[in-house]
Length: 133
Length: 133
DNA sequence: TTGCAATTGATAATGAATATCAATTAAATC
DNA sequence: GATTTAATTGATATTCATTATCAATTGCAA
Image: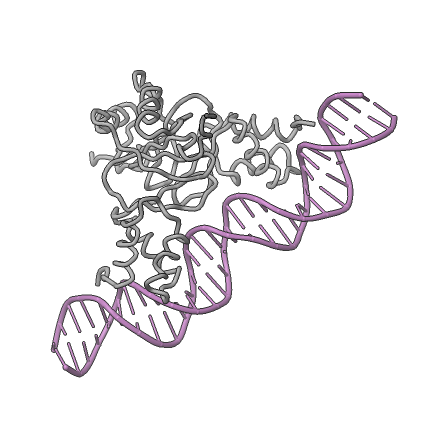
């Protein structure tokens, strides 16, 4: 048999997609428990891993932080705030076609590139000190 | 007082810079122990963290993997093989000036960008199946 | 060479992520 | 609808990378 559709799997995916931010497993689990108190954290771990392997969601690895998940599948980048650790989506600019980079790397190194991700680091708008009036 | 220069700190940095690849703490510790058997793994952890905070080395976060360290400080990208997990350096192409992207993000989102990193994913040359003769 | 705070080595503690396992359940087959 | 079977679940134990703790050591300034 193959994979099954379970109530838990659908709730996990639906809840993740409703997030604007990129929650950790703990945060997502806490949110789901509001409507489904019986769900186990292990189930959240298992399903997110399975969904990430299928490419339905994306795991974001941030240095010195737990894994975070992104329900979006379209090509975009991330901004990671050094102060608060928040992860924000950054739209990919038109004209930054990744295919050109992929072809260059393929030719120069012999690596078959399938996807890429750019992370920007600095200080987010909320953490920047407001100018004195 | 400020930070001190210790024998251990210099050996850790020197050994990391001699690596072509991007070792984990375990791998780096094992390499250092060949010449300095008494060094503790905790010391390697502590110094790498301190060096990364100073910007002397770079911590690389790979999903589903331990932290890896990069002794290089110049602007470059990484290729991460989905099969073997290896991390390879990719030269940044001239003309891909990050400053332009930074200014665009600053204007659109209000984020103060300081640095960025692009990771490419796929299959490395060693893992690709050779063509049948 | 003295004083002191940073550092070290050894080890315990933390905590995210995974493994285990009996009970449950989705879905194919009858 | 009933049966069958393997995937899934919830609960919990386990693993293991990383950090904290602490007494002993050491770099460095005075």
